[in-house]
Structure formats: C-alpha cells, structure tokens
Image 1 (cartoon, rainbow, N blue to C red):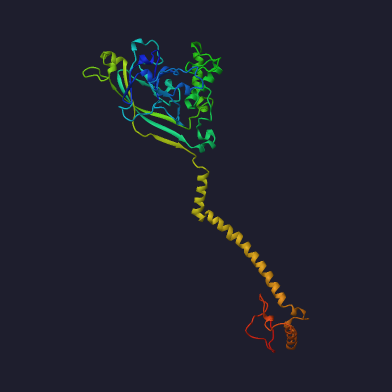
Image 2 (image 1 turned 135 degrees about the vertical axis):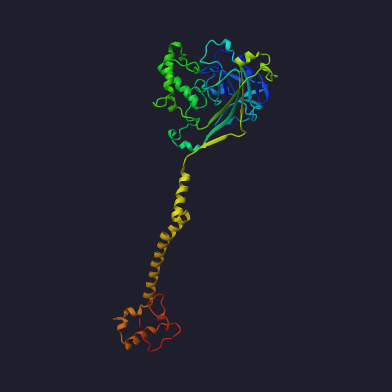
Length: 430
C-alpha cells in the first residue's frame, strides 16, 4: 500500500499520470484520499473504508472512484482475501516483478502555490505500509524530491504465528492476534491502528479534543484547534515514549500476523531536453518547470516470492516430552516399551511366582499327608522302630492296598521305585 501526501492539492492536481501492471489508469480511480497526521494523502491499494472502520461517518475514501468493473473486497494479513472474489477487485494483487509491471506515477508539486507546509522543504512524502492501517506519514514517511526520478524496489516481509501461541501470555509472546484486542474505531487490529486509538483517548482525557486525523465516532468529540496545540504536542510526545510504562507502545503490541514492506530507494535527475520524452504527462511542460516541480516514481517488487517468518513456542509440550525421552534413551536406554517390560518383570512376574509357589506348597503338603496317613498312627517315629515292628506295620497296611501305593507321592516325602516290587525284609527309610 502506497500513500503520498500534500497539504492543499487534490489527487487530481497532484497526480499527472499513473500506470500499473503495464496498463494506464485514471489516477483518481486507483488513488483514494486519506487524512493522515501530515495532511491529506493519496493512497494506492488501501483497504476500502467500509472494511476498515467500524462506522463510515468519517470515512474519507468511502465515495472514491474505482476502475470500471472493479469491486472493493475485504483483506487481512491473517485471513487473506475473502472467498468468491470478483473478476476485478481492490486491493489489487501484484501483477509481477520488475519496473514494467510495477506502479509508475508522475507527480506535480506546484511549488509556486506553496503557502503552508508541515515540513521545511518542497516535495512529497511517500510511505509503504499495511493496507489495513492509517499511514504514519509524519514520523516515518520518506521524502520524494521534485526534478528527480526515483526507483523504489520493494521487499515484502510477512510474519505468521502458530495458534499454539495463544496459550502463552501476551507479554511473553509480545504480539496480539486480531481477535484478542478489539478496537473501537477500526475493524482490524494493527499496531498502528491501536496507537491512533490510544492517542485519541489520551487527548480526550487531558486536552478534551482529538486531532484531525482521528475519526469522530462520539457525539461529544471535538477537533483540537490552534489553542490546544501545546497540549496536543505534549500528549503526543508522551504517547510515543515507551520508557515510562504509560506510552502507547507498551499498550499496543505488534500483531501476530503482520505485513511489512522494506523499500530500497534509487534516484537520478530528470532530463527534459535533448531527446524524445517518453512520458506523455510532461511532454508539453518546459524543462525549467519539470526540474522544479515534477517527480517521477517507479515502485516494483524485486522477487516473485517473499520471505515469511513463523513464530512458535520455543519448546512446547510435545517437544518437551520428546527431549525427555531422547535424554533418557541416550543415557539409560529408556523407552515406553522398556517401561512396560520393567513393570512386568519387576512387579507382575515376582507376584505371579510367589502365588504359584504358595499354591504348589499347599498341594505338596496335602499329597504327603494323604499318602502317609497310616504312619501317623504309630506311637513313635518310623526311624525309631526296629525291623520287626516295621515289618508288622507294613503288613497291616498292605492288606487293603497294592504294594506300590505306599511309595507313590507327589512331593519329596517318599522315595519312588515303581519298577521294584516290595518284598519282606525291605526296610523303609524316610
């Protein structure tokens, strides 16, 4: 978005010829009048007032002309263009790169008609800015000298942000999303629009009026006159300061989605005599008038693509878990599979082994007690019986059992010899 300022001239008087994308246009159809802190300006490719302001009562460009068949559409750095675009629309996209497909404008300063100026020089001011914001011509506008041809090579820089930044505090991330700080005057949040509102509120509080470039949305608002200029200058300086904690830069953070144009200026003197003049707008002017009043500016993009930077959390929850897992894996060979194995081998498996052993012991004790039941009736242990007493005890037991049953046991109680039949004379030794 381009803005050029004047004090008393209109756009039709200041702009001699205009060409964009290799096509000639009527200047008043592609340039819109805008009121700034340096006076009235002619703005190219700025978002229309009905999409910029919340109310159109003070919209300076709401009745501006447009090329035939061109419609104004909504645009923002965060959402881009609206859906279902018409065939021809404004703001217009770039046609291509290079001077031929850029914007070429011839301007007439009319120096002999100067009677009041906001600067101590004769000429123009030019500023490349976000199409959604009011240009700050007074503070950051660049001079454009009459009698010279200026080439402005543009480099666009766009800033995007991840939605994950919303979870962080505003002061930590140092930026605001468009819906986090609704403005009273403007539909879209930008740092410049927020600063204009901040200055207007401070002027209303301390001076009881607002400056000429602030839209009048309240019925009791008054524009500051010459008698309030000292108060206006004092409050304006205070609003720009950021070291006192009360200035507008502390309140108005930059947008998390932003678009910035970085210009490179190159100038050469205009020559009107000695060769054929290609610019038809100055063909019929004298050389002295051209060198004193006329300025030619060519604005174009350098590259087809632009550089975009994306802001995100330095380390999020996913990155934090990944880093922890990587460190543990590096030093301990740790992984989530290892965690499952650790729980199984060091917790579940020992419990299972203890349960199995406890049940096995109970089964063994039951088996031994069942098989050795006849011997529990002996008055003294079997290892204290003599041979004749052992033979008599075994005979009494074998009357109702097979010979091999006595030696059958599940545990460690009796020796098992299933293939050797019992005979008299064999002694049982536990």
